[in-house]
Image (cartoon, rainbow, N blue to C red; front, side, top):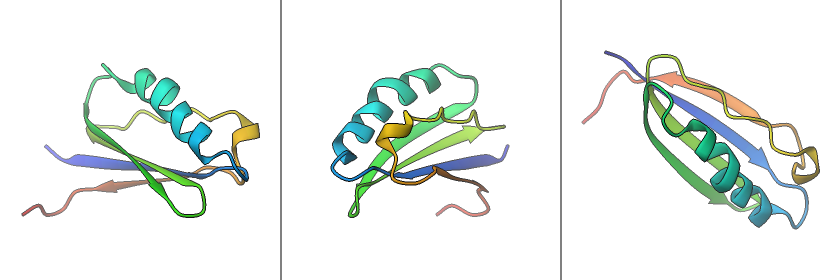
Length: 87
């Protein structure tokens, strides 16, 4: 069985990084919990008010919802990767 990592990355509007992180924790993650195939989810913050959510799936990833536009400094970026090697 292959594992797919889905990466969701957004840059918050100026001064709204904490709000964007809270939106992911309170809205996006609860919407993913219990979905078939979700193995794990991890939320990161980075300089420049960037927020990164990585989810691991057995099968096709479920897309993360769009946050409110007012929280965003630019459109969300999304990538999916298939695991090829784990040590």
